[in-house]
Image 1 (tube, one colour):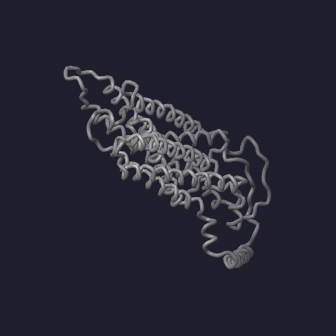
Image 2: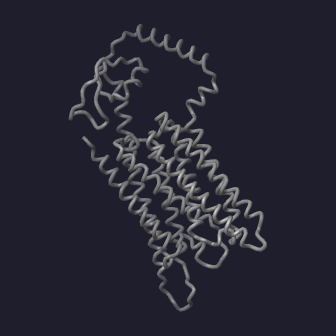
Image 3: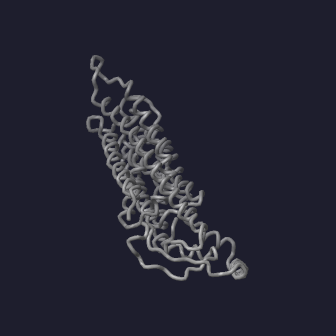
Length: 379
């Protein structure tokens, strides 16, 4: 039977998606149909640092992608990630990121002054304040989801601890291999019934070996592991264990390099023809996946593995986003480079380099999709 916490988690995630889409639409079209932003970076004719918009676009788009992937994974019939440590980390970080973005928006638009001297009510100011308030509310929703994720994680830990409290326990069939490694012998697997918990069918497990038998089997396993280590080199074994996190680290490094190059190029406004849609797409792709891959890497280092369906979802979206960003970069480079009589070669070199790294990262995401689907290995 599905628990109340599971239903609450799904409802909260759907609400987060709806609120995220509302924020994204206002963020993108709140300035009389044009780009609004949280700090007015491109709204006025003034020199400003685009860092606020880079972070804001990454948070808004990145968390929309993350939550959509989570909900789609629910539709595939798996709820393992609801009690994953990675979900706790992502939600916890999201609390601070959303509140920070909302604070920046409220700070800027609260003191905003329009172009007309004797006009005191500005539509863009009201929309900007609304975006800031909604971001703060979104931070509160992420705090609620963090609490729910902690509850799920705690319940899972308690279920695992019960394995050591008695001689007769009920476990998931998926855990059979895990229990065998702990010298537990599963003699029968009970059929699925309505009384079985939401984690799946149960298995009756009994202690069927004496202490001497368990010690002998442990020694035999050590011998088998020693033989396996002799057959396989350490490098091959490490690659087999850590290929997923290696690809995630590569994706994050390429994203950081690409965004560093594009920021330098955008100091020359003629490079992208001041097209806010293109700038938003590029920044959203780069910064959002810096956040997503960073959190996945942190969770993996803490010993948590995301499901392979969830990992494929992130990789597919990453491939699409970085391919689109590269296409926009190459289009802007081709359109504006030959249109300028005296183009800034340094800026265009930075722009095209960012596009190349975006293509490379898209290829890495594609390789990640193929390997994950082929092996069906948890990240």
